[in-house]
Image 1: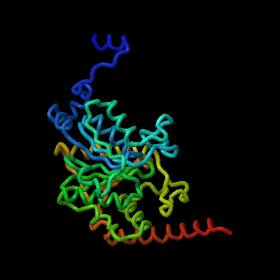
Image 2 (image 1 turned 135 degrees about the vertical axis):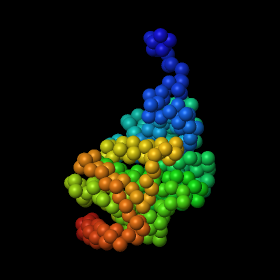
Image 3 (image 1 turned 180 degrees about the vertical axis):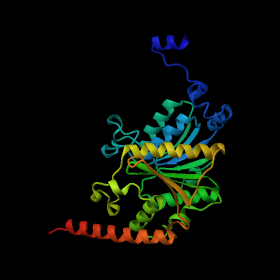
Image 4 (image 1 turned 90 degrees about the vertical axis):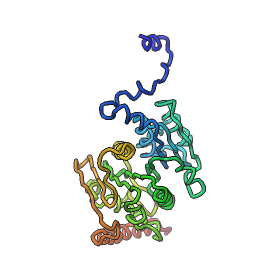
Length: 308
């Protein structure tokens, strides 16, 4: 009755955490929901997957976040990014996403890192954090390696969910298990090679490739590639599920070199296993083939764009 009167009067009902997240109960116990309320997640990148990660974890009732991004929303973000709207174009992604998350739960404790994340603020960004969710731009190789290395040193579980086609590939890096660098073997490589190793390491099953209709849109050399909102939403759902298992200590967490690739378009699920990561002999063959194919394509594209 009181809520009805509030609505009739145009008032905003008082926020109540227990009521707001009561529909989580049944899948979680009351004690587990209280645990989630006391957890803190760090998310670097507030774009396609990062914004969806933040809102999904906020709706789970997680109580605190560190979020980082130095970018602003622009028109090419419209097809997939949760905070990209006409009303937010040109605005800082961290500020927009902070406001959206606090509109779900005004009690949230959110520390914003509008300069992004790097060696200068890494310790503060990861201070008191229970889990790290990777949402950096695909091509942010140095920053990604630095964050994962810091998580490994500090014993912080880290999850990456990559939007690929109309699906997602997920890897978890747990304390004491295989590290990000040991799996991807990107250190000391060119940007092109790092992109290749990251892409094939994330998705050795390559479920997304058969329905790529225009391969010219994949340009590792120009740091550009196609994306879909379906993939970003799937990333958020799967990464949040892994986060729940890790934070509550409930359910088996499959960590690298094991992973999972689900493709909604093909309705296929592959549980991947890549012993040795990108050092795996079969993976080296795949990398060599991809290196040759993509290298030839980029060389041809470069000649086409040379001045006459």
